[in-house]
Picture: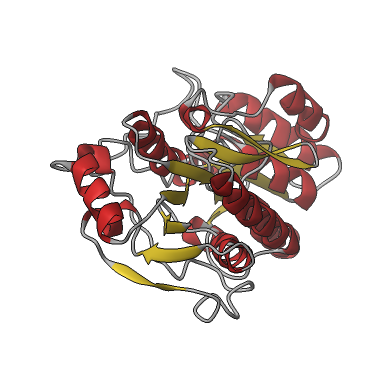
Length: 341
């Protein structure tokens, strides 16, 4: 068997663990590989690199992806599916392994519906893909955010400040909730629950008047205020027509300072959450997903995505990756309110 491998969408820690496991597993099963560079764009333009045990050596601990990445969607390209088929024929491929998030795997599902053999591996630091309990990259992003919150505690306390820390999370507040809980933050704002800025300020005033001189507020980039409570953000659109999020904390912080009188500062983590060395969990998850992807291909499980269900690695229809997003459930948010209410 011969497979093509690509990584698409935003990079995240743990991608190289998946690639390494795919290659190492294939070496024991008489499977060879072609690496496509920069996601689906590399397949469309037939840009490849050697992907074998030598090129995959020493990459387990490295962040990013040795294959490169992009957000190109082959279904939007001229003759996209036919160009994909052409690249596969030229390289004698039996199928493709696409490692990515909603956009990458959504394209894979559409190609699969057209008869092109694709297997998906889920990754996104947002952890919002349906069909899997957890995605590659999420736990590293949470650890980065938690480490930053730990550091912000000391400077906030030293200066009696409120510090608003903004983390990624376009449609789901998984990173914000996990980091806020594990970092001991004092308030949480996530996309699933529009916030009332006056209620937030009342909580901060109560906290500062009774038992603390500082506070840490964690805000997901996709968080929005309740209508009429404060100005709503007006984001520019990216090349795909989606709002280019980032900066909600720069609207929240001045409102807090104006309404409470507490000196307030902002820290926006941005892409630092995506970069750097993956934590052990993401190395392990990526390794297990890579093994499962090759085994699934060997069994002819095209049109499916490997996933984690409890402690087990299983597989689900690839189309599930484009189903309703996995958002923070109401009951989990209520648990968090014990600490942020």
